[in-house]
Length: 319
Image 1: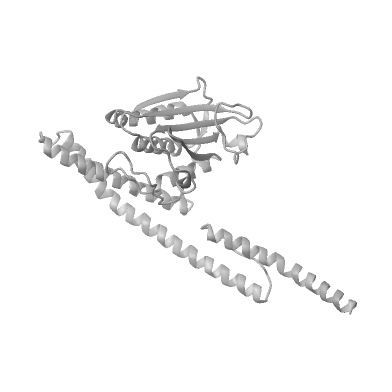
Image 2: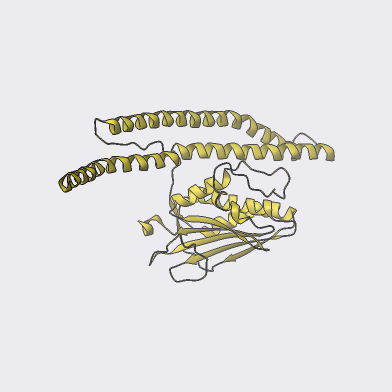
């Protein structure tokens, strides 16, 4: 009896050890596909039921990848098709507002301003769709060069000063005196700053405040809040960037969703007709993470909302 039980136990352990690795591979692959990675494949190399399951799984991934590419190509082609006429309408509206076709009445000006504003929002949405398409087809490249990040932020502030002034919003700069040269993609990070500033203006109440902070952060320094999930490396300099706006803070329950594609927050923008596509923060997060950084938001009770970015000053420092 003991011999039979021993043999049975040995066989059970043997079968378990034989099945465990391929099953673990399938579990890992299934999770990858669930997260949207259709490039994952399972290599088991067994001519049994598990081998057939792995083959079926790989065939499914091939089909999903084909469909995903078709979707991305369709979105890109449609976006390009819409972008050209919308850009023409945008330029025509600007010319009318500038008086290129003669003086227009105040009522006509208001109508053209509505056309120009709504058309601009459509162009922004289309650009975001195109960027997401490039991201999902892995065609969005990072082109690095050395530049002054404080100048990048100041340029962005200049672009949004007029919009802030129209709503009597005060923008306060709080920069470290000496910010080292930053290595990264200027255009991509400029889009990150633009998006965060534009969002802040949209959701700040009339006559509110926006505080833009720029810090050099090191291990042991207490000049910038660092999330627990992000570990600062010894000897590495980081850039801390924050955009804080007064007003109703983001609810804690929303914080885990705001960087997802197409997510629309519960709060309505203070600027009429300025609700976006739900892609802006998704793109921002992608560009930050491509620079080995981290972005997060925090709702400060009875004060407002802060969006914070932490980036290493160069890729070389994190390699």
